[in-house]
Amino acid sequence: MKILVCISKVPDTTTKIAFTDNNTKFNSDKVQFIMNPYDEWYALVRACELKEKYGGSVTAINIGGADSDPIIRRALAIGADDAVRIDSEARDSFFVANEIAIYAKDKGFDMILTGKETIDYNGSVVGGMIAGILDWPYISLASSLETEGNTATLDREISGGREKVQVQFPFVASASKGMAEARIPNIRGITAARTKPLVVIASSGNEVLTQVRSYKLPPEKTGVKLIPADNPEQLVNLLHNEAKVI
Amino acid sequence: MSILLFTELSNNKFSKATLELITYGRKVAQACNTSVTAVILEEVSPDQIMQLSKYGVNKILKNTDVRLHHFEPNAIAKALISAAQQENATAFIFSAGYTSKAVAPIVAAKLKAGYVPGAISLPEIQGNEWHINKNVFSGKAIAEYTITTPVKVISLLPNSLAVESAETSSQIVDFNANLNDGDFKIKSLEVHKAGGKISLTDAEIVVSGGRGLKGAENWGMIEEMANILSAATACSRPVSDMHWRSHEEHVGQTGLTIRPNLYIAIGISGAIQHLAGVNGSKVIVVINNDPEAPFFKAADYGIVGDAFQVVPKLNEAFKKFKATTH
Image 1 (cartoon, chains in turn orange, cyan):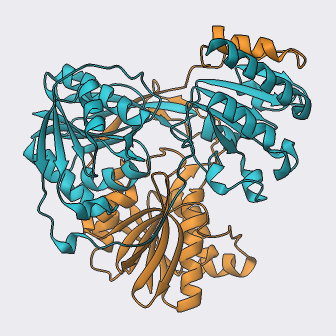
Image 2 (image 1 turned 90 degrees about the vertical axis):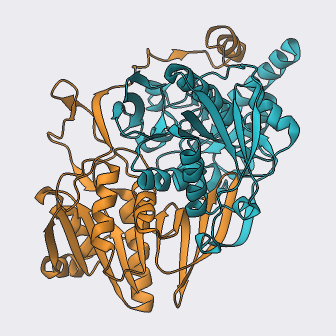
Image 3 (image 1 turned 60 degrees about the vertical axis):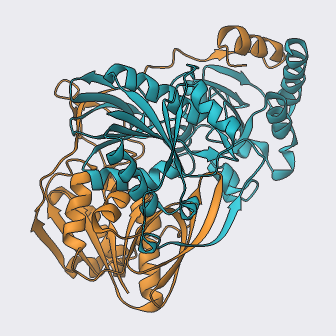
């Protein structure tokens, strides 16, 4: 089984968000970057589990500059066999999906996995776009993935519930909660990661379909209004007359 | 030219999120001087069709291919693309949710259309250039996106604008995208629908409980409050991890993102990962016995006190309020 896992570099969850250049660029100064938790915890770990059970290989792919290498090494330490970095800034979702699709097209992958979304742009887009470009079936928000021969069985979240589906290789899936437990790389993994192959290739697509013109911070909360614990009627009154939400 | 909307039914009805989508679509169409076409894949009753007319849909494409009743993103995308081409669509708009996440990226990639997922504003239209706001960094910032592609794809985040009726007479047209069997590659084995309950992402009011409630057996008062307020119930991650509540109720970064009008958090400290899932709520009420709980900083109203004493009293007050207003 040959699996491609898409990993993205994102600011750590606790990052204080700020912008520069007249609010047109994210301020990455002093920001701690990590592998997107959904790519790591759900997609990559499940890919490694499947490979360890059935054999095959896991390749991690990232679109980014040399500053992505630490998260790529982490993916190798967790259990990916090799990695590819497309040497370009991730310009928009279509750009990223297109680069991955161009790379994956004739390499014989059985599946391409992504996390359910990235925690920076929260789009939930790249997996579906890869599937659209390659014309492979797309299973979004999958919470489990099992394989037998060339058939995969997945649980996916759908409007108002859940569905168990079956699909033939190759396919694209985005991974959500339940797919796998978090895995912390061990010393052996970290040592092995240093010598695993990381291939850097030039980007080949150049199409971008969206741009961010500017950023702003959401309006600040004006401060909490505290209500005495023995006067819940006051809260009800405020919710009705002031906030007008009941 | 037209603005196409993907109107999906939930339990055979159009949800509030879909009515918001129609209002949004109508306003976009007005700004572009064009009309609104809705695409419906499922069986739909005449009274639901009337809903579409009531909120301003000019034309309804009613799918006649029963194979599309099954949720097959690639096939649905193909059908929607064919509808978009047939109607010469300027924009294809979805309601942001499970379906849009599966289908919209495929449509956008195949049409080479700029896609803004989870829009929170109407587009500011300058000729072919559209500017649309979207939450980024898990709600910690807002980005203004620009799309200039000939066709635009948008998904609208629920609770981003108020529903407005606009009585219209709608033309109903049968629609068949002439798909091949080969377009259907995903086989459905089993479907579990939650059914009956108010869906968390649609709910206007959400009552949520955290670790401070000490155990699954103490959820009676949370459910009671939800009943009184016709609200949905939710929980924090530790609660779903400990199996006190089903993981479908988990809101936060690794669970669902919701943005109701009113979010009442009881016994939840307000870790940044939890806030990421709820900070889009219009009004936040926090009830916690720890005055230092970080959630108070993100709240509009707060009660510092023991949930086991505060909540039953608050439930009585809500009951009294409901009895006098209805």
